[in-house]
Image (cartoon, rainbow, N blue to C red):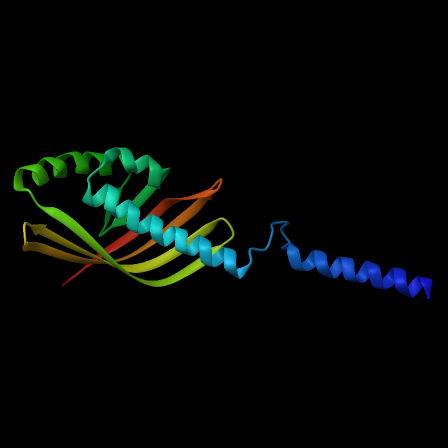
Length: 164
């Protein structure tokens, strides 16, 4: 009886260890945490577009992007430096022309992989001047975000401009 009790205890211990860790030794992330992480990355996408692409704030790049961030857009490769250069030029145009960019996102799919999350979405940009719409654009995009400590940063983005 004592042997059965010891054997049962050992088996239960092994089974409980198998449920809390993956074969590579990393911890399993429960569904609630996965949902929170995915929500955080979607917020990261929205806020990065607001601060970087709408407000044209070059200082926001380091807040939202990893140092080696790449944007692959319609055959062009952008890094943080080329994005900052674009923002400086666009900021001058925006001040001169007095327009504003608004963003809207329709998220399609998100996949959580331990310390990275992949998200696909439609991105809609609208440029307004006063009450007038002066331009629109539509992109199909995806991002890869990685966990840096307790926060997420965008590591890579792929963007394809679609016809309106």
